[in-house]
Image (cartoon, rainbow, N blue to C red):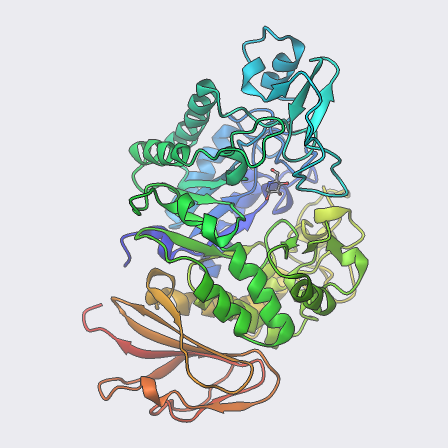
Length: 548
Ligand code: NOJ
């Protein structure tokens, strides 16, 4: 066992609103989720990350919050939340929540007060300026949906800053009272028993915005402050951050100048995400090798969180125009599949043409490469998307539980969002009930894959390295080394069957065997003639250290 629980976790991300509705009002709720914990335990999930659970006008799917100290009454009560924590913990499952404190909703009482008068005690909780900022049309996150980052507020008679939509005013982190409030919010949820936070938009939280100033100073020490605060309140709590920044900026999010992991525990691996998509599109492992090589080494305790799909578009902005064009051509050929000129608003299964071999290959890659895997709800059964829905809602449709009307998500006629009803991915065909009794289903595959992963703690808790050896085109070989032993992985991104010689890795003391793969390839021998089918993959245990 690693001393860091999050290094051996399998994180499952879900939005309570679209997961399971227990009271028939069309909206998923906490009691519905509690009823599905056994399903999640069976899948092998060890930690949940809940998308925002707080009251919200819902203009950015809950990322616009009006009260940080309770749950949205539509999904239940604080009592239900405490019960969720208890029931999850009984099954060995931790719960993390989204912490969205770069901004509030413009309907938050703090902002209502702030805009009402310059004398409001909350005026300085937001970022204001009296004259039109010269950079008001710069730095938009949602081009096409957002026109500016500074908007004029007629009530306040001043301009306010919003990195995201104009209904999401940014909090002012120059103000010590805002910092204290955020610590209080974190302490509140830790006291209730959450295992940590998925921190939204961290680069923008630590950016000390001033009109006309670009770049603005960054206050990395605030992350150290938050880490200390969190760790004093709950020793094993974890901060998992969204910080999609250039590789050379990443170390500062994990460590102080001394290099120790005094800031965030985990960061989403956006670099690997984009490169993985490129590798799958080109059927060439080189982009993955580059990502492993070009991202910084992490300090002890630091960890990547890997993902293929999340609740947003796949962000390809860190690829070159040519690379992006290749991914668009392969996975987002229609204009309607793309978003903000940089991303793809589809689920993985339809992107890969529903090809089971490629879906397994992609998830086998994600789960065996460095870091802690994060899985988006519904991916384990190969759910599809609904491109008729606007923007990112295409991938935020309700969970498909059964063939019952509305996929068994709700007994109401009108679910919060339509359940996917298409020929190939509709709930009649793609649903949990059909798959959980079928060993050959994608769900059955995920269950076995995650169980094997848990028996292989060197993956994600150990080191991950590319095996730099001449191999046939399309083949990635990598290894995981930890105190428990060594695993070797082969993935064939191409369609041709190949034979690979990895005998250089073989030691006389080793007794290698395949513990997981797309098929049974027979004895592994001395690794000198390893067959691998097109889109095939093999997990080979090279050695297990005695006593581990
Ligand atoms: C990042 C979240 O992932 C996204 O869904 C949201 O719209 C923005 N932050 C604004 O909170």
